[in-house]
Length: 523
Image (cartoon, rainbow, N blue to C red; front, side, top):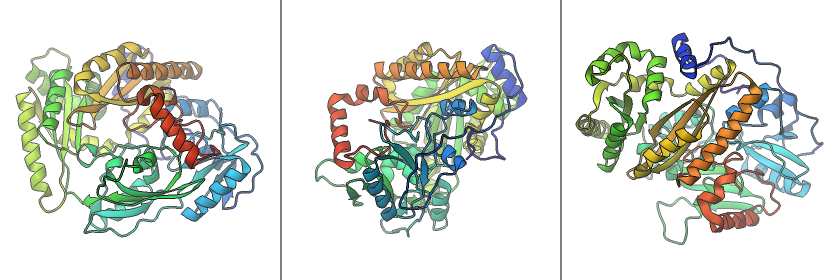
């Protein structure tokens, strides 16, 4: 991946001139030419180390393993600042080599930061020493094998360094799918998904990653820990959940047994426009509480709907129809609800068609105006390109950042209003996704005109704090799928309580007594 942004060279997200002009107009700012990205920052001289396995102290290798991909990370890098850098990058090729690396690090007082795809947007892979004399990044890309599918049970065992596209392609070739497609899919790993309790864009039907994990194996400084794959059990608390979402603090995940399903047919998309966010939310809730399980279910507020229409060019085609349907004047202020339906196995398409028809009846009864499948198909084509847009906006001095949460349906209106009041940003948009019968994930995107990178850093810091405070005040989840990392850590005790945090710290002492694993994250 690029050191200065998302993804790889040669690919960028679409940013039509009219969309860019519209965004600057909404911000009340003057358009400006892009700033060129400067030279890469150079890591400081490394602490001399003698790891027991293949490693590198190459400056570029250390740079790309230093941090994640939040706007804060990229602003610092573009200012040629590198607050934390690993003294070496280690490349284990097996669980045994992971164990050897952890034993060596404990003896040598070296912090170990497990590294998958490096896509964290919450400071989860920052190479922080945490008081130890040195730090190394443990790149798990060498653990990438995928076993045979247990077709009778619908299970597969895979190593945690396998990238999302490789895992899915190998399963698809055998007629199976994980069905887990986070926005970071192209660059993230199975281990990263499990360590952060990731959500895929099809999770409303297939579940988040924790629902797919049947068993796993982790290497801790105190030894190996294996949790067997079982469909369910009542033999005490489910200790597997200590490792799912542990963010590399309690052990290094090496192998996971996943629940997989037969490869579905094509996704069946439907879209409706609603007069307002409240009416769209009511239809979404009714779909979920009626027992429907669309793979994708997303409701965008008025601002996000307008921007997506402009970005996709659909405003020219759909705008006049929607204005006539809503009896509006010259401006479209509706909200877009998109649903995608799929089913696995021989009856999968019949199931998808049935759910699609039921959802359409609910949407129409709630005031939704149907606009067909093209918005969904466009979203599916472009869904992994959206992070590139953030970088292109940074190039022209516009700060764009996201955060997400989850709450119950009854609390959504007050939470959305409070977030908009709390943030300094002039533009704040929201969509509901990853829906459940009792609530949904809310994903906020905010924009600010910030041509001065120093001021942008200060604004990012204030906004991150304000977002955490308002989520805590409204009893919402600190994170639904981005995880905790370093950035969200100050609010962990608010959500889990002091007794809960004491239990987590006790697990940390038992599994990592010298505290070498991923310091200053989660705990």
